[in-house]
Length: 322
Ligand SMILES: Nc1ncnc2c1ncn2[C@@H]1O[C@H](COP(=O)(O)OP(=O)(O)O)[C@@H](O)[C@H]1O
Ligand SMILES: O=P(O)(O)OC[C@H]1O[C@](O)(COP(=O)(O)O)[C@@H](O)[C@@H]1O
Ligand SMILES: [Mg+2]
Image 1: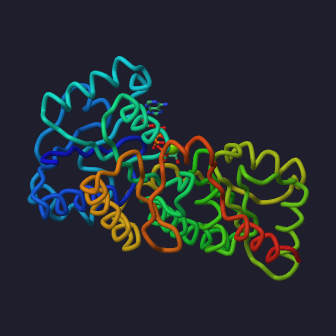
Image 2: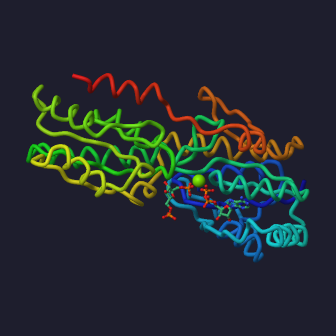
Image 3: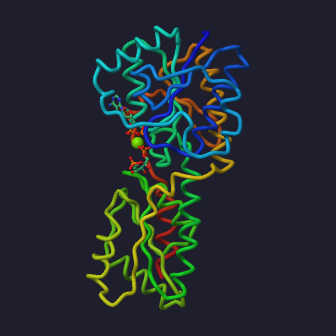
């Protein structure tokens, strides 16, 4: 193996730069060249790539986003585009590809493997929604950003004895909501993985107030419903309640990555290179029990679905049941 390529795809996630740096520096350590592909699969199809140097990666570790840029490129679901991507890599003497992204990105990589091109995945998405691994790059930073914003909102909520509904990201996954909710001591956490009853939510909020709380926080995962709809529904049960809604949106995806995101991303980047050198293909790097673990991409995507931490969700239910 003399030359490999790396790309980032789907929603950017803080820590992707650390993973790219891990790939480039580990490859240099083994005397392998790395080509950086710009704009995910779009750049792969269009041949938008160039050799990355150690200098390119210097200092990127502390920056959010991805310096290789990202794209959502639905065309890549078509075989003709996949074959074009393989042709681009072969004509540039690229022997293997490392993809950093979410479940969609992994599906794209699987197609490349099916047509005979070696690939390795690195889970990069703030959603933490890839089956198998307990952790995806960017989840820790996004959760901490959400938490910091909830803390700020709590100051103004308390000053007016208000309830705030804070909508956080996660597409179909309740991970950011669960973790930011438990970490902020929220009165209620609403996630797509669990049914909820608005009467019960209102009861918990009002019981909290009767117990002496001066404000209330509800953390709502975007996959359930929009924050305005939630506030409207809340008011149907308790029309006089002083309640406001906030959507954190893309604020959660930006900013300098946490140490956890940088460290795991670096580890997975470096070990992805080692895996290619060991002849491995079609797997992704993940974390299980705080240790590096590898998972078969095809098997994982076909047979497993992501599971939110129901124990943490239940913990919050218990703690808010007065
Ligand atoms: N089934 C698929 N086959 C081929 N490529 C796919 C497939 N699903 C997604 N992709 C590619 O991966 C990209 C990123 O997927 P997306 O779901 O947007 O983000 P993420 O990888 O973060 O989940 C898509 O824009 C597309 O280029
Ligand atoms: O940035 P966009 O295109 O508006 O997409 C928003 C979505 O991207 C995410 O931030 C990350 O999701 P992916 O990792 O699947 O790209 C989701 O939480 C959110 O629903
Ligand atoms: Mg996704």
